[in-house]
Length: 251
Ligand code: FES
Image (cartoon, rainbow, N blue to C red; front, top):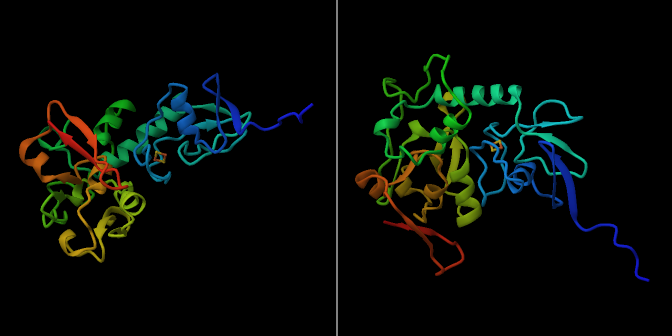
C-alpha cells in the first residue's frame, strides 16, 4: 500500500470551546474568524501582513503567559484559545480608552462618521468612559496640534486623527511597492510622515490611494468624501488594469 500520509498541512485548535481546523501558519485571529468569531482589531486587515501594534486583539492561550496578539500568533495544533473573558474585555476597553484619550472628539462632524473603525471598535469593546486627561496633542483645543496636509489633490491628511496603526505605511510598501510613508516621532508626537516630513505632494507618493483605503480613521481621506460626505450607498469595483488592484467607490 501507499505510505500513510501523516501531515495534511492542517492544524486543529480549540477556540472558545469549538474545534477549528485551519492550514498551518494561519493566524489565531483568522482561525477565529473562520469559526465565526470576530476578534476586535485595528491594525490588522485582510490584505496586509500582520503587525501586532494596536493590542486590541489580545486573547488567552492555555499554557501561555500574558495575552498574545491573535493577529501575529500562528495557530498551532492542540492550542486552546479564549477570545472572550472579563479580563480580555477589560484590557480591550483599556486600550481603546488610551486611543480615545488622544483623539479628537468630533465624531458627529467628522467626515468618517459612520465609516470609522476606531468608532466601531469603541462600540464593540463597550467603551463608556475615558479616565485620562485628554492632554495629548491631538485635541482641537491643543495649540500644538499639527495642521492637516492638503497638498495632495486627491486626499487630505489630518495627523490629529492618526492612531499610528501603520496600515497606510504597510499599504504603501506592500500594495504599491513604494516607500513614501514612515512613522516619525515618539509617544504623543508619533504620526505618519511622507518622506522626511515634507508635504505629500513633494514626497515619493504616487497618489495610488492604497494608504487612503487602508486608513481606519479620517486621517487619510479622499477630498471628494470630505466635500460631499459619505455615499449612502456605494458599489466597490476593483480595477483590473494593473496588478495593484485599486478599488473604486461609486455612488
Ligand atoms: Fe492584532 Fe492590532 S489587530 S495587534
